[in-house]
View 1 (cartoon, rainbow, N blue to C red):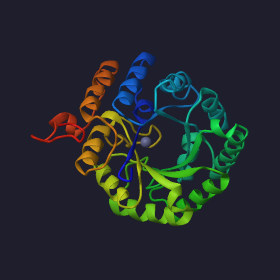
View 2 (view 1 turned 90 degrees about the vertical axis):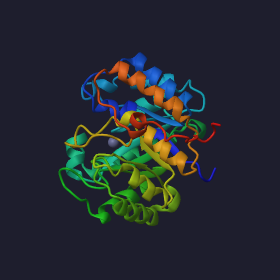
View 3 (view 1 turned 60 degrees about the vertical axis):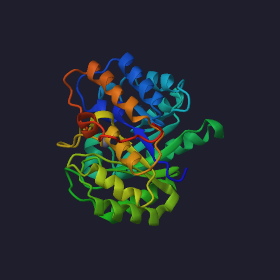
View 4 (view 1 turned 45 degrees about the vertical axis):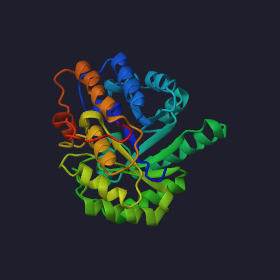
Length: 311
Ligand code: ZN
């Protein structure tokens, strides 16, 4: 298992929240179903935000309940506050991530909360989780967003990221994550920040990165991260996604291209790439005309290339 890289599909959350049109619930279920059948181990199915803010994700509770019925699938969601966490727990999510924006300006624009208020919310969520029997407790991640820079504030000092990472762990998170919300990350920055945060909170308390491909460095950033102990990578099918509150940010790294790169390097993902490529049709049919990205889907596999597990 040491060369297993866990891919977390975030398209149904990060992708759909940045697209104005609403994907019908049936199509979302079909998408989640199909990706899980390809072997995708974790899917972020939605976000518990007020439907007024993101009507695209208003059916998150139904999706969590549905996704929970799929064998072996880890069902992840985003929550902005305690209220969202209550809903996520009620629905039965396996993993809850609360985004804490390293940029306080972005935090105020995004969720109208200061860092102090967000950390209070984190503590309240931890207290809520502790009231549950241990077997029913969701995994709780503090995700530091705009960790590699913010469209409003520019670069965030590393000291601020370290301070927030350690505050999240002290508040009781199971782990911290780093998110390149704006697509500003470069490989050198990824290495420096991953090393610094691991040194601050402990090697085992930072294992995941959320990357965007806004400036074309998504996969290069993944490689840099893999060399420094990162084992979970967020990606979205067709690279759909972005952040509605970070102007100009668009496109998660493409799940299909990520699976190909990892497969070619001998990493295990458990994902059947041929089958994954066919899942795109579900998204295209539900959201006709919506841009879908990806090199492997466009160009195909190299001649004679054998995907691992295929003859
Ligand atoms: Zn994102």
